[in-house]
Amino acid sequence: AVFAAIWIKGILISRTLSDKFLKNHRITLSLICFALVILLSTIQWDIIGSGQDTLQELILSIIQSRKILFHTFLIYFLTTTISATSRLSGGLFLPSLALGAMLGGVVGSFFHEQFPMLTNSPGAYALIGMGCFFASVMKTPFTSIVMMFELTRNYELIGAMMLANILAHSLSTWLHKGSLYENLSEQSGISLPSKNEENEELEKETVESIMV
Image 1 (cartoon, rainbow, N blue to C red):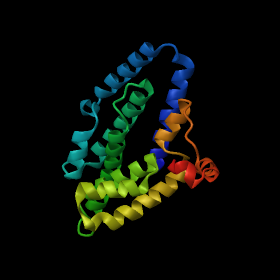
Image 2: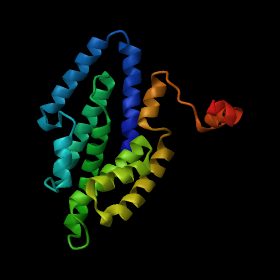
Image 3: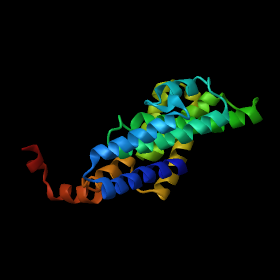
């Protein structure tokens, strides 16, 4: 939840700064972001892309080194923020899952190393971390729970997923208001109606006017 809030704020701040200093220089902004991503890829080349391959390896518990996972997380955290700043990214849905899986893998590898007889495989922690990060970024805890269950079909993890997702959502809401997409829309000048505004509009309507 904490890293998710930092990620959202990082994207929003970087986009605000780019609009302030490079508003009429989109090509320059794109080239700067591209150069920064390429520079970071020289440290770890496999961070380029959606993160799907890394995601699969984490779920299958192929990657278990905490240092490698956290190192990959930090670099991927930066590259996705830079890509979002350029406005040329392929989306933030899959990267949010990959970042959560990496953090979950870090936690899972630690506990599995310390308490191998009492804990599940790191892949299970990666799945829970994926759901928590997604719930924190998108502010949709129940969607996250259903999505994680659809991916795993594993009833054994559903209780842990529900508890972790709801806690992560509550903490992230306290740290940062609104989902990533809501904030990006507002930053672009698109204001979505609040629940109170929707209720006020509906109260003015009659059943007859809606049915006609």
